[in-house]
Image (cartoon, rainbow, N blue to C red; front, side):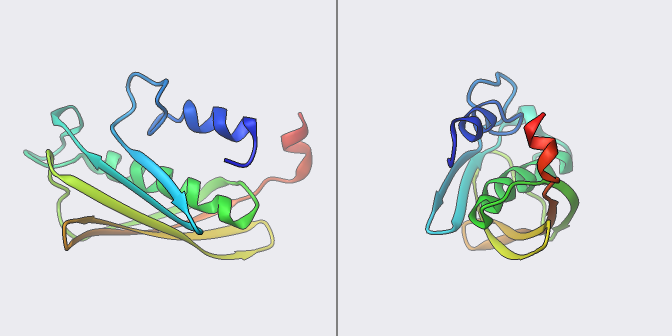
Length: 139
């Protein structure tokens, strides 16, 4: 994390924050500009029988790429999130996520990510974050 405020935001994340009792079991790490995460989703997150609910699929991608955007030196809000669900995400199996910074143009930050169960590609996502103008952060 780049600042104490970033650490607090990560700690309280509704998706991966350890101080949120409703947060799913998403474990995040960033090394050399690549964000990796993993989770074993339980019945509490079920959508179709035996599978992860699509809302949690999208939320996990959003959270993983939210950390990946930090490689840009900027932080932004989700502008557009595109998720391609290629196969259902199974419950009770380890799901691995990988995300990275794609590019930055002005206030826009693009990241891409994948989700896998073993060697099987489950989904792909792309996000565009919009970094706010400076006065927003100063309030």
